[in-house]
Image (tube, rainbow over the protein chains, first blue to last red):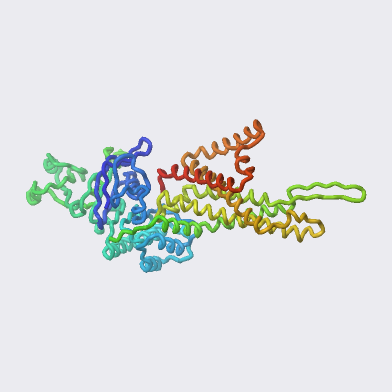
Length: 296
Length: 246
């Protein structure tokens, strides 16, 4: 569906994306995870054909998305910056959208519209942030585009609506499979939904793997400082934190078969799994240390 | 997965309809502009009088020029408006690429040109009707007062072309300004400055001579259509690499 090779995008001297290479297969849900300013939106807008890559190659549906009719007709890009003409009320916008998207599911649109308590005569400009996001999401789901891109779709939504949205997305995806890319920085909320995770950090791809692989990517060990330090030799340490006086918690990359959990337990070291969300935070942490260092 | 095969012509039609629906406000602004111009025109553009002990003559000239000029300025403004970031983004909310966005804009501006030309000419007739009833004690020059159907069609045609020309200038100017914001000041200064210099030095304005003083209708049509097409073409070339939804 999407192939990207050595894609670089610069704004003046700032590199937003540098030599990004990845491939996204058809009919999968991919989560694009990264911190603020990591290049998520730039990457998505390049896929959508809104931005022009500075160098490298991007192919969507085997075409260059920039100015491609085929990509435009089969892609929808949902974010909280979506602009609609002020003269149109919500029901006008829905009926306009219907004209643009051949796969548009009117029934779904109307049902979601009613479920979330919108009124047809409301103006999009006057909606609250969360309501805007919810409305845009309705358009994104109902358009049933082969390539559906949600750039931080849950901005401003309350917890209940977010939950509803994820559920609606999954249900509609099962009924009508398509390629969905979802960007977010809240991985724990969406990890049950995703098949793959694309972790992006400072314009580079940190990792691209399935969620189940990501869950086993690292383990956390906790115990006496010296004991734990001993275990860290020759290991890829992702995170280290002192707990209490002489206790240490460390997250290390999990290489299968290298050490047994049983052995560690006998030594008095506690072994825990690491949540994908924490893992992504550790993987994308900057070298300047933690927030505590700012205050010390 | 079923891939949509959208034909370009269908998409342009869809975008055009979307623009008509989304920009109904433009028609109200046209109504306001033409009403205002009508109000100004009712007083006449020129008046002179002479008189003796037994007789005095007052000659007043009325014209719908002002209505047409106001309509042209309106069209220019609308064309500039369509090039703003906000309006471009409206297109790219739904299915669009740069070519269809421009083509549907041109189609839209062309329709507005025809529509506003018709209403401008009809406002001119309204002006005649108002004068007929309000100046019932004066003699109206029949030669100018009545307008034949042929002349009516001809005025609509010529004014449409003028408005289209103005729209294309506005559309190009707006696009250039979008690419480089400081030009919003530089561009008008240079244009007006050059017109003044040319007018003073040579006593003529070549653009005026080229279009307005062209005696042949056929050549005038060719000239305006050609120049508008070139300007619209320039916009396409300029906007072809423009990034959207920033």
